[in-house]
Length: 268
Figure 1 (cartoon, rainbow, N blue to C red):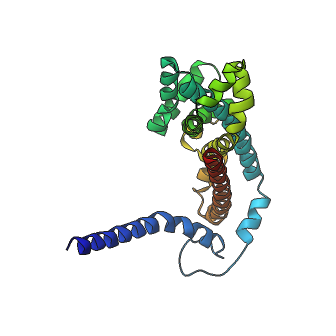
Figure 2 (cartoon, rainbow, N blue to C red; figure 1 turned 120 degrees about the horizontal axis):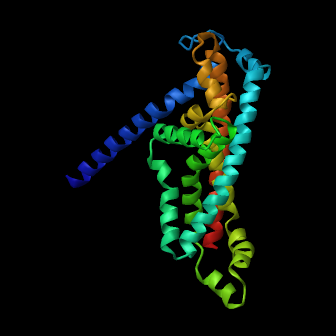
Figure 3 (cartoon, helix red, strand yellow; figure 1 turned 60 degrees about the vertical axis):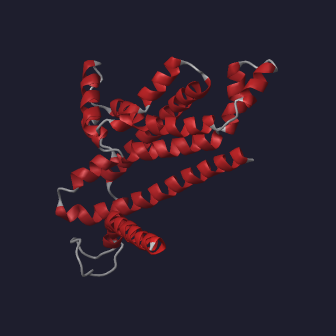
């Protein structure tokens, strides 16, 4: 009876997982499908195949400006978040200091705080600082949003490096900065690349913080949100969403490959 019950439980679990995946990914799969539909209505039956909505993306000046803004903000924020996350994680693992532990814990806190609260708090802060909603404010907000990801990734990588390696280098007379630059940094390059890519995705797709901190320049998510108010823009938005989906999958896949490469080097 126990074997039969276990087999039945596995079937129910498999059915639950399948239903969950369908519920989660079916709406996402419909976006590319309707982006090729020759109709402004996202409904069945499909009216025919067309590339018109993708062609409309190329001549849209507002879209191009929003994309450039998102790329600039994303690259800047991810670079800063990666450097900060790498530093915090290194001090957390090898610093052996209570201050380092506290800073590491604080850096990972934003992932637990609702985005609306973070956005309102940052808006108050930038207004008090005299910066106001601007691209600089968005970069600061996205650094805060991406920092937990970089800290977690880099901490996992540094924790996997045997302590005997930096200790042996220090015994041979190497200073701590030299150990970090010549030994720890090369060993962590795959994780650094992975952290940078995931931080960029976090910044590129982030909407709530940008909504509070954007000035006159829109990021791409803000542009998409503004276009959803116009029914005739829905097919173009779905085409844009399909392009973003493909790019996100490629970047996330590359980040995972880099992470796996780092794990493989660790096992060797």
